[in-house]
Image (cartoon, rainbow, N blue to C red; front, side, top):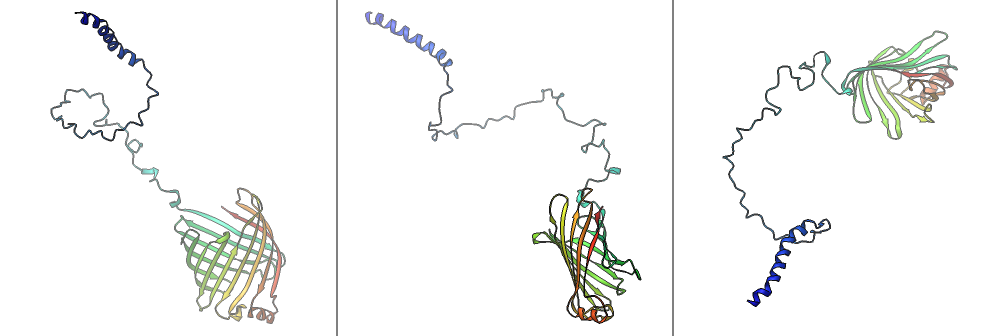
Length: 305
């Protein structure tokens, strides 16, 4: 009995501690506890039974009338947000690059003071980024004496060949020798941003003419641009009636100082041009009392729209 009496205070204190421990634990701040170092690799949940059959669950009594869905009302808008209307007069959406459009560019319309002649180089096209029809003409018109107009015009189909190069094929007519020709060419941007074009003309009499051109734009600022350019003409056979000899026939060079204005659509320029005959063409021109080398101050405009 004495032993029991002595144990009662201990039992009372122990019971109080057990009852108070949940309250103390609830007030403990556990934000600083770190569990990342706990080893849990041996924990295995594969033995847990998760195969309870829910086939007897019935949701038929649940009221879902307020949920969105079901058959749409008769006046509901169509998925294309056009009130049920088709493309109709609005047209089918397409990529902008595939829309046919047109353009006109005047690469040169200037006056040569030494020769009293007007030089021109114009081009118009219709199509998209993949296919175009191009009409092109270049030449010069004398302002004195007979006022003759010598031009080389072509109508061609144009198509991109790669990222930087385009090809064209068509028909051409040369008023200087009054002959028609088949034409094929390639134009594009060579390394170092050199604009390059090469065109071959096969005339009805078997003559083949090759025109090679190169141009570079040296931009001084947002408006002023220096443009050096050169063009080389080669023929496959002699044609003395038109001052043509086999091989390299003529070299034309020009340097322009242009000022771009009106969103760069209009560019007045002044420049200096130099033309020289090459090879046997020099002797042929001397025999006909014609100049073999000519130079001139030029002035004109470039424009596109």
